Length: 467
Image 1 (cartoon, rainbow, N blue to C red):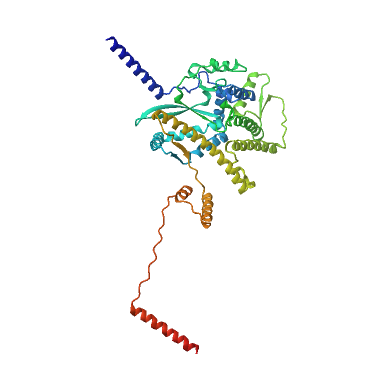
Image 2 (cartoon, rainbow, N blue to C red; image 1 turned 120 degrees about the horizontal axis):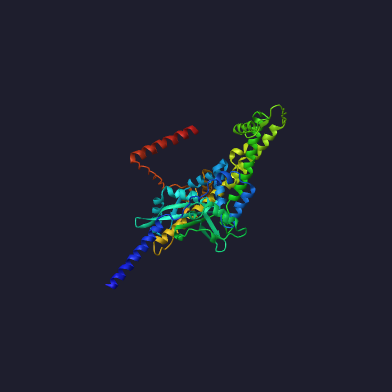
């Protein structure tokens, strides 16, 4: 009886362990919401961010806690139309590319095809989020699994916000900040308490199985701390400089492009003065003069105000151009004006294609990491790993050039195979059978006699004509 009871308890314990493991792998384990007391960080800290604040955000990220660094970047990427458009352009560019799965292991290729079919639109969202790694330096995902057709498949691939990442430079490991166990007040006080190295043990972390985490690192990474890679820092400084130009231009327009208001108040009544100030702030932020009744104010006219306004426009256009070059490697064609040339445009387009190629390779590497992980989970001894790759689609001009090359090769005795032609031009070829030549019909004896007789008559006529 005791033996049976022990066996039953062991079986129940094992079953509960498996149930807990299944629950751990099928449910989300990382909270990504804002901590408590974040009510004024966007309207106060980020809206009026000074150079000192921005440098502090970058320094926190350098020491392994990029919470404010990425929060600030996500905020400006939504506020600035140029940055927002360029980042969307990078994501959209990779979604138009075609891909395929190759490998000699048929069962593995079939499994990956089923994986792609199972993910559906989620796959494109995964690619779009993976491309952020080249902008932000790193992108981390949480994978929640589900049983599907006797296979473990990803039910959800959650992109986790970069703001809750942590990096321990001693162990060179990445972690997640547990936002449920800390608030904004405690976080900033903890970060400010360590002027040199941040003690990450003071911050609560999320413990989660490594099989549920997928890391995508920037392809051009040269720093061990991935927060320092990508183009995030450069975009932050570009936005910072541009934002001051925009604010100054708005002040300039309000001051010179609209009439200046004069408002008088009773010098013996301070309350009326306060009411005038409040009224002016409601109507205009600048270009208002409030003075006691009985005094006179002379307005000085700026004769060069038109030229000064052009300086603001030129400066804003400069930073827009720098943001465009930083994101896609070239200026938009609309900014070239009449100074551009076809050669310059082709060079710019080539640079832009190289940046897109970088994002494509990042997405392909990320998905191949996911494929290898799922193959290891579903197959005990896989002979190989199927490979996901993008298909390089040649342009019409490139196909025309390749056609000329094939003609020249044929003229010197070389001929490409049918398979090579199909791969180069992305077409299905069929052999063309030449029609057989019809054999001449045999003539009868009467027809031959008639032909010989007519031939003899013509020869006699030629002889008579010669005489």
